[in-house]
Length: 79
Image 1: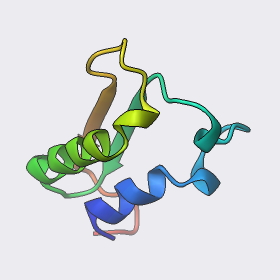
Image 2: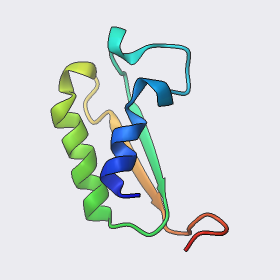
Image 3: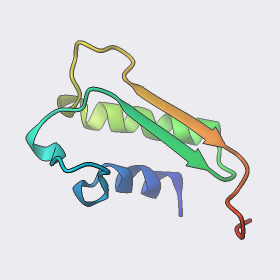
Image 4: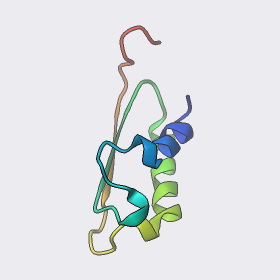
């Protein structure tokens, strides 16, 4: 699975970890944690794409409200 697919799936309503529908409100902040071997540049580009494409869904009064991190150790059983 690519970084772009993971990022896209994270913002789908069915994958939210709360009982709120994001289509009827706005995000205050976003934290994405990626696990496995992937390029930091690719993650940064995808997060910038999310911010630019979905800027209307984020509040404007919190600057730099998207955080990303990468753990380069893959989950057990994956390479």
